[in-house]
Amino acid sequence: MERFGTSSGEISFYFAPGRINLIGEHTDYNGGFVLPGSIDKGIAIAIAPNGTDQISVFSKDFDEHCQFGRNEADLPSPVWAKYIFGVVRELQKRGKTIPGFNSYVTGNIPLGAGLSSSAALESVYAFALNDLFGLEMDKLELAKIGQATEHHYVGVKCGIMDQFASIFGKAGYLMCLDCRSLEYEYIPFHPAGYKLVLVDSVVKHELTGSPYNRRRESCERVVAAIRKRHPEVEFLRDASAEMLLEIKPDLTDEDFRRADYVIGEIQRLLHVCEALKRDDFETVGRNMYETHQGLSKLYEVSCDELDYLIDLAKACGVSGARVMGGGFGGCTLNLVKENRYDNFIQEVKKQYPAKFGVAPQIYEVIIGDGARKIPE
Image 1 (cartoon, helix red, strand yellow):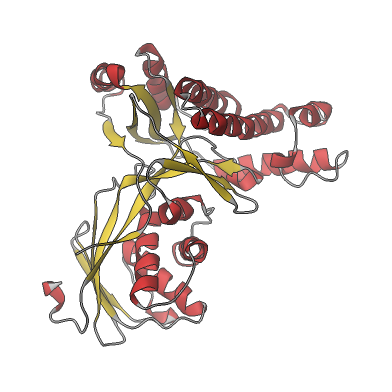
Image 2: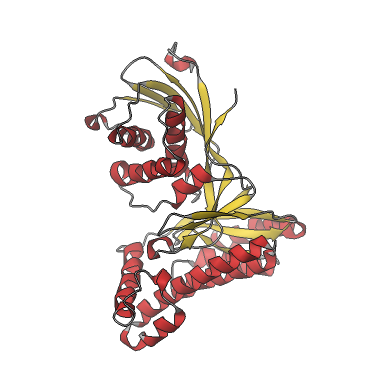
């Protein structure tokens, strides 16, 4: 904080993590469930009031300083600063007064790896400002502030899973979040003898049009068709496989496959929650592979690189693996027995570059606590 000169208050330190989602992909906008957990990588900040009406932030990772006011017209130019500005504005919209402050921000979360570095940035500032200035906002509202920041100041119409996981995370637990009601349950995650590791394909395929929107529209068309016979169905979460088969003659093959995946994925997630309560990680792993098969063949959001990494995981005896995130590139999430881990990583590092000409990035992750103040 020496970069900013003398602050008018003591310096405080805060941290908020990124997240993985064990299973439950493309279920959020279908009213279903997700199963995220916060990880041991995230964003850390130092922060202190400065006695002015200005906010002054230095980003170590971008080696950039940004200063801005607290009014709507003060939107800063750097994308990373928009997240901080958005959190301040969303707090003010809720009637909270945010004094000027100085801050230093850094992180150890890989950017672009699908671990929600942006949600961690929003969450650490929402949590810090709430604590530092005694705003008395509950955790769910803090998560909603992060989501609203994405919507209004970054232009990403995201769900709430990433911010929820960053705020509510708990070491040794995943969170089964009902995306419709926002009710949640902590699910024990004690993978003794196993490791979670992400393999980043280091590719991102840009497809023409909007593949996300097209898939969402498919799901909405199927819900509308089912509702004609079952008016109680509001989301695919409310539909059964039998209901889907009833209307199969009325659907395109594409719409049927999209809905078939989502309905199956929601059930898989619930099965995984029960398996985790028994510490049955082999069942968890089998469901992860089934999820990838569905994402690849039914929802069609995989790519050659990701499918290759999944096949390689199977060949190495990995217990479970799937593409994590929206798809078309990014990471695979792998549940690996410790006695198979070294061989798997060795084979990935050898075979993937030989096939695709690019070295993958490897990130081992541990489930940790959510946003918190760091003791000095």
